[in-house]
Image 1 (cartoon, rainbow, N blue to C red):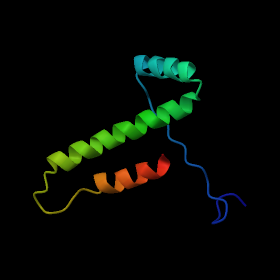
Image 2 (cartoon, helix red, strand yellow):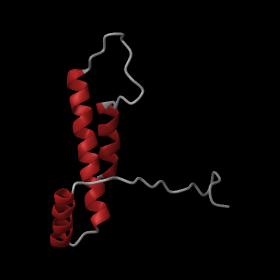
Image 3 (cartoon, rainbow, N blue to C red):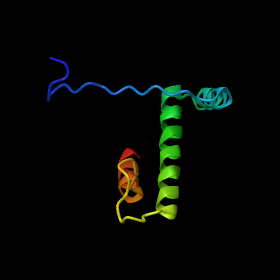
Length: 84
């Protein structure tokens, strides 16, 4: 049965991407002969990593508590190293 512990459901994310970014990604995917989804996934990972880097530098930690949506850069880098 799909959705149980042995057969987890796949996650789907819908994003609106600027037309010029999408065209550049399509061109890159065609040149490299890789699927567009792989190029977009890589782009999204880089974007999230850059946001995490900015969070780590700015870190307005006035109450000594980080917001729930805060991305821990060290944890993200460990996850990214596992993808390579």
